[in-house]
Amino acid sequence: MRPWRSELKRLLLMLAMAAGIGFLLGQMTLTLLLSLLLYSALNLFQLRRLDLWLAKDPTLNQSDPPESFGVWGAIFDGIYRLQNQERKASAYLENIINKAQESSVALEIGVIMINKKGNLDWWNLACENLLGLQYPKDRNQSVTNLIRDPRFADYYHQEKYSDTLKINAPRGNSRMLEFQIALFGEHERLMIVRDITQLHRLESMRKDFVGNVSHELGTPITVIKGYLEAIMDNMQDLDEKWQNPMRQMRAQSIRMENIVRDLLTLASLETETSAKQLESIDILSLLGEIENDTQQMFASKSHQFEIQCAEGVIFEGKRSEIYSALSNLIGNAAKYTPANGKITVVVRRLKKYLEICVADNGAGIEQKHIPRLTERFYRVDSSRSSDSGGTGLGLAIVKHILSRHGGELLIESELGKGSRFTCRLPRSRLIENKTKTAVKKPTELKAENESGKIAAKVS
Image (cartoon, rainbow, N blue to C red; front, side, top):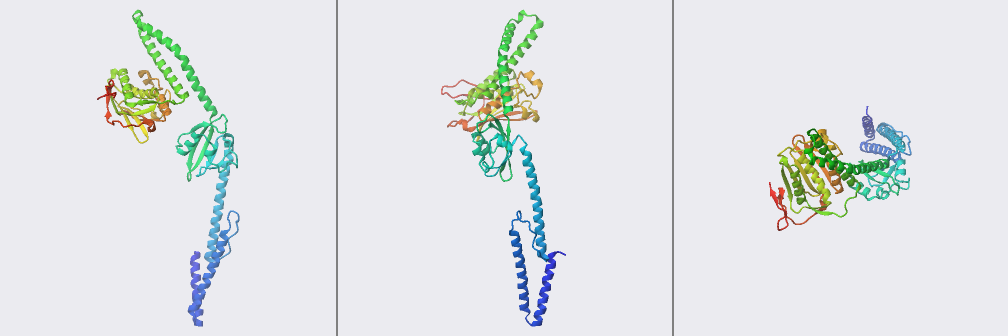
């Protein structure tokens, strides 16, 4: 039987006895009132005992509950059982945390726990070697005060933790560190720190090697190409059986020259810092120039070009690099779009970005290839490079150029329905002024008219 039912029966029995005694004494109301007061006093006494017991810190004092009977005995025993369960769960969790901390000591990767206030809660031994943290001196210190690199502060506060941050180690040592942060709990953070000095050194050696080899290959390829062109000019003097091999040799020498040129471009983009002196780039004029060059290059395909861009969109950047990026995208669209296809370039000013979208109605690309398109020499189809003469470096160059200008490249494609490449550049680099916003759709860029404005022929 449940304790509260026994307690109810006990109360009713007590009231019945009090009523009987009161009836015999002729004071039924008084005896019932006295019995209820006695019952209340006993309950208050038990509440007092419970309060005194609960007031003790259970982590310091594990005393047994007060002895009692009835419903109060059940309450004391139930709370005691809950306390024991909580102690066991806390001990289990503490054991897991201790094991995690002990195991992390052996790791070469730094692990730091940061509370919701941005202060250091705990770190493993590797952090003392990598970041120079000292326990307990640096505990509860702000992480941005201990790692003072402005790039770390930006990374920490922007909370774009899908990417990692690579910076030099603080306190003047020559290490290169990689930081990655994950949010958990009540806006707390777990920060992982890796020493990538060796990887960084190998990557620098790879870049130097590619740059040096590309530079050294430039001269022999130029010589070979020069002699082949001289032979091609006197093709009539050659035996007919050598004419086709000579044409193939010349085509491959041009392709090799393009690969070397693109490798040198990539090497310079990776090693040079972003240009400090920016140029004002008229996007409509630049697109018209690229369109004209692309039409001449692929004149046999008779593509239809459509450029939708307002007049007066002026972007601050390095003109040669922006030209190279957009030329690569529009050239690729023309290269892989069948004859009489349509290529559309749309320029839009959004709240935070300037978007330049290059879309075509070509064959499209399977979704599985899209994440790897900006890798060097990656091919959707190995036969495409030989057919089109591409180097496989164009999109890697585009990605680096946009990154140097604070932008990014977005790729959308559907097999059989064409592709869309979007350059997203920061709007803060736009030179805002009061200009016409009419959309232009040029297919041929005409010469500047007397007023100095660029006229566009509507397709």
